[in-house]
Image 1 (cartoon, one colour):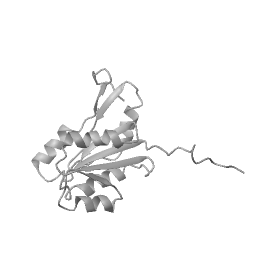
Image 2: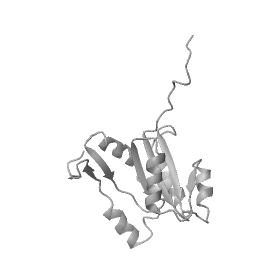
Image 3: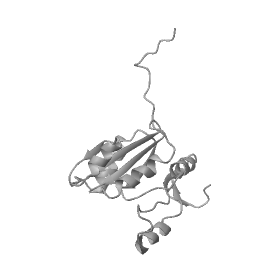
Image 4: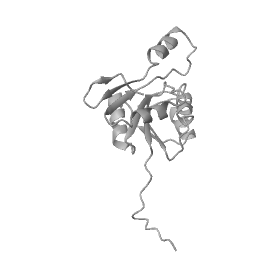
Length: 162
C-alpha cells in the first residue's frame, strides 16, 4: 500500500507564467486569451495572471469567464503591474503581454525552446493586434514585431538563435 505524505508533496509548477496588463480591455482581451489557450499547454503547464488598472468595462467579467483571477488596483502603472507578475509568477519563464497582443500558434513553445540555452536572459517575439486586417497601422505594427530577438544574461543581443 502506497502512502503519500501530503506535507512532502509539492505543488506542480507551471512551465510558463503569463502576465497580462489590462485597463478597459473588453474589446481585445478574449482574443488575447484565446491566443494563449490555443498554444497547446494544459492548465497545469500555463499560469495566466492579470493586472488590471481599474477597468470599468467588461474586462473583469471576461477574465472570470476564462477562470482567471485579476489583481485589480485602480491607477496601477504598467511597471507596478509587471512587478506584480514577477512577485506572483510560479514559473521561471515569465511572459508579459498587453491585452491587445495576440501571439501566434507555437509562440510559447518557441520561447521555451530558446530559454533552454541558459545564457539567454530575455526573449521577444512576434505578436499581432486582434484585428490585423483593420488598417495600415495594425499591419505595420505586426510586420515590425514579426521577428524573434533575444539577449544574453551579459546584456549582449544575440543573433544566432535556433
